[in-house]
Amino acid sequence: MQVKRFVANTLQEAILKVKKEMGKNAVILHTRKFKEGGFFGFFSKEMVEVTAAIDNSPLTVIEPP
Image 1 (cartoon, rainbow, N blue to C red):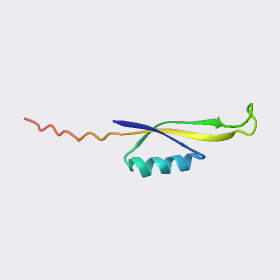
Image 2 (cartoon, one colour):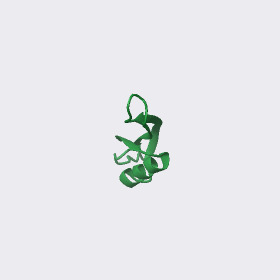
Image 3 (cartoon, rainbow, N blue to C red):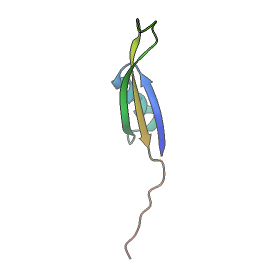
Image 4 (cartoon, rainbow, N blue to C red):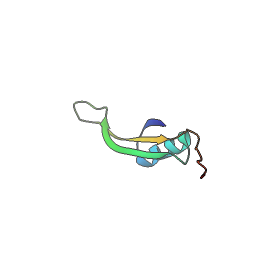
């Protein structure tokens, strides 16, 4: 399983990054908003962090006896 963190200005941008890099089968595990930059809390910019995962292991088929 591959887990990766994506940071963008908006949730939509972050989801586009996830789909572009990990594909449509990626699963979003967590999202959060945070403030970045600024000076003592002033002039900071609100950003979005998305944690996504994808399982790259091959599927195992178990046949009944």
